[in-house]
Image (tube, rainbow, N blue to C red; front, side):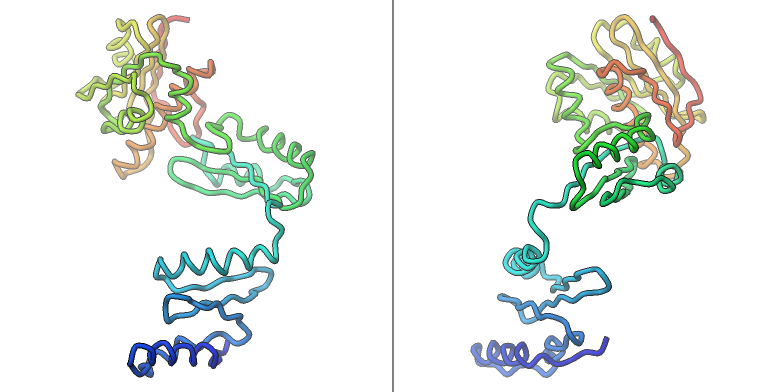
Length: 301
């Protein structure tokens, strides 16, 4: 788009510099050049104005990058302007968080489906989670119920949370004061770092632990309290074991990622998901697609 000089902003710039006893530098003239047809957004505390315009069906807002200027313009001008175009409270978003499945795999299963009118499906990847969103500005609740049932039919095996993802908080609530021991090696202390602030009755131990599902589970199966262990990494992956004093399960998971910190982060989340499954009385070992289970071992029923 061609640029055009906005005399009203140029005059304001000249006056601002004049009030400080200075002449406006000629280079500041470009701050009054806006795309033709754009609506000017005044900047109450800076020299660069903002503007908004329509691009196709989108209403686009442009502001200076200085945080204090941006925030004030959003609060005082942009949000009120949006309120004149979109009725408040009409957009509804429902969120679903999945683990152990890729975005492309979900897309293959979901994008070919027909969804109820006025409901859109969105994705957001944030390692190791894929967030899915059902979004609508005018759908009926019956349409949302239909869309949710349709979505859950596909993602339930990988679903770890709805609406909000706070696995440490959820685990703390479900433990309800129950003591938890964690022995951690191959995940670099990430499980303890994540859970300790939320679970005061957690007792953590860092140190070298054996690899392999059976060896790791037998390492902790003399404990009387709920105990989790994350073993040392081997060529077969990293083992995770969970024991409740009577029964236990262990698995070795291999993550096909070269970056060690990302690999450890995924294993740390898998360990928390294993504990979540146990506390929900679900099978402790999830059927993940993005992780290779190379070994598993069980004690008890």
